[in-house]
Length: 498
Image 1 (spheres, rainbow, N blue to C red):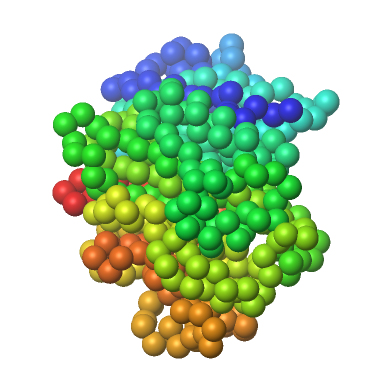
Image 2 (cartoon, helix red, strand yellow; image 1 turned 180 degrees about the horizontal axis):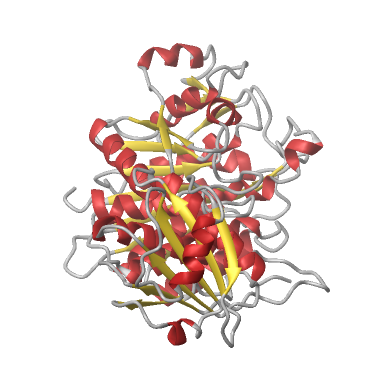
């Protein structure tokens, strides 16, 4: 059985202020040289003759990658690549991923890789971080339980040569947060069941000094969290619940500056409105939002972010069975709102409704939820970026800035009040969803807004990028880990003065 938590750490970073001579370069299994498209390898780069030869071999277009072998005792792989000087962070990560794919693909046994970036110092730090992030993503093995599984990749160290002012600790923690999301999301549903998830939470809370409280089904029934319990009702075991984790830095008031909320549907059959096979096959990934919230909180604790942060994870399956909830039931949620059930496969918004209402009781200064919520968002954007809907312009601006800086792209959709008429119910305060799928990503957000008080800024991230065939940006696997870079960039750079 695969381990519940990753056994692999991201490679250690060494920042080296100068360029070594050729003999020191031979200590590495591979060397990556990233150039602006209008540049050429500098004469001071070790083994400059070979780099110049590689440079002359083809066009210097954005995303071009070439490789050769250095004539030294280690047969070091030399990889050269080109990126537009004005590339967005997403494009930079994508190009960095091409270099990492070449390096790891040709030297899967690499233990040490060197990175050289040409360019001015401010941009150089961002380019160096992107190459490190790509190497960490490509060297990471997703969980598997195969008799003939390939040996674990061995990349242990990345040396940043001619290093700019790069924050090595932040880069490594961010890479490990993304890989934690990928690992948890990839786990089979019989491994990451509710009991397994609770063990993950207990381990991480103990390791990083987080406060953990589990609101089980009995406690949720006493609170009146009937929207969540409607979803969990069809499960074979009574082990679903809402996890509450807190990180409170020294000297900070216990009131959270930010509450992160994550959808943790461990497997989604669709319930009574059963999914077809193709739609159900990968529904163990429907808990990606909870993994983003969890990994972000752990990373914030490791980096000692000066903000008090809560994370709330709605952890349950959506199963089929004689007790599963049905269309036309009327459910009273934790905040008293009554819900007319329309479709049992709109379970994510039911589980999140009570989770948001419970998180709001702590009166956080802002709330952000992450959820693989609607196919409508995928149809609108594809899996290349994720959707943002927000009640607060300042929070939305901060998230869009964090998206641009992190390379995890968001597109903001409108959240107009008149859409509520599509959720008018003859029998309850609100319909769970409309009968038709038009604009469901907007309607889902309008539904969730009912469970967040008007005086709390709130943003909803519809994670259409949680999975993408062929990977995304610097991440090579279908499970992308999207969201951790975004959320950490928000906390580190854009909410400090919140």
